[in-house]
Length: 206
View 1 (cartoon, one colour):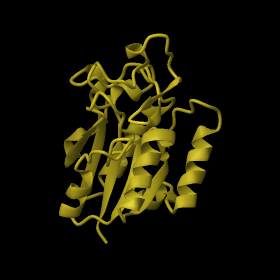
View 2: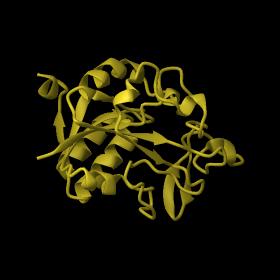
View 3: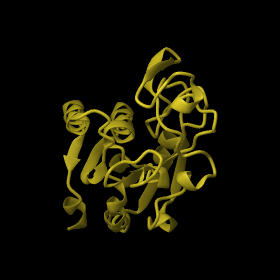
């Protein structure tokens, strides 16, 4: 079995005080750095949005953060402007050891549709190329960490399962948005029900 660490969206805009703050996300950096040293293959995703992205509430009249609209026939949540291409907010979180990241996946660059998963956009119209890269490396086990548990981590895990990978989500190395109370607990429950293995960082660091 060949495994890889998949770091989801550890970018400045998702850190504490960022444009789309995931509470406690910055505290994950030292733990993720420790995990990085225990994997031969380290892959990371970035939200990489144009300013015109249709998931930004600011790009819709009379809409607010947390509202929903239809994009490609799929309901999408509207968010603050975040992770705009080549901005500080889209850069790696302060302190993250990005020198050991072997491959970077950019997602959400199509302005007309969001991309929570590191594998596909939300309508599965386009692939990010992650599956092809993992197959090139002959990876069959994925260990996922990062943000946000209840969105990009969850949907990445779902797609990884559907593509045939053994999927492990490192619970203490993830943080959620919790847009609505209970979202994080619900996300972990949904992942378990689908067959994702929820593990602790200690199982890898020992």
